[in-house]
Length: 346
Image (cartoon, rainbow, N blue to C red):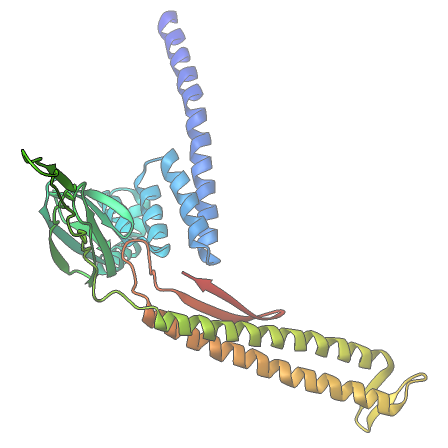
């Protein structure tokens, strides 16, 4: 009887010892999830995704998988998000999945609406297939490639063959097929010299120089040109100059109004001077402030207008990519504390 009680005591101690790291691990996961949700609420999907990935690496649970899928969808990775959300929903008995099942189901539907499929066939066998800069396998591919909707850049290449490059547009839920047959590179013949000396007379030499071989490379005729992008950059430069001028004038206006407030006052009866400063000097300061302020607004407005025009030109001049978000270049501007802030995305 004493032996059984002693064994039960040892088992209880062992269970308590093993549960301590489990509780610590659970606390770390909860802290990462809380931080990730906070980053997502304030509009930082990239930072949130990193936190949820760490939580999933620590604990592969339906909850961490569902949170990771939501973060991937917000960050612009619908293919990965659909896989994780579908796997999380396969565990309906999990309390967190049961509680947020509708949220996860709606997110899965949104992710799948942003996914299409691409089937690449052809040869030679072993040719590498690259989609939007990422290698997805070699021919023949075992299954279609899941990609984000939009324009897809496909490159097929193999040793001793001409490379094939093609843009393909894929819509949500659509499957496009591409048949690629790479052309083998023909070897360049070496120049030959044949000497057949006759029995009498001078030696006769004949040589043949082969014409140069021009290797054609397949280029997509629908690839975007550069004229619109050049115009977009010029307009974008004008937007930056106008915004800079608006900022400089805004700073000058602040300086003038500070000088005015130091020695002058604007009363209902008009401008009055304080101290040794004359009314005319106060009026000049006020007029200068008003002029700088008015022209700074013109600069900001011009910069915003030119920025919008530049964004439209860049948007229409460059195709989008699939898998990882939109590849079209754009210039976005927004007013800030010190004026108009512009950011280019490529």
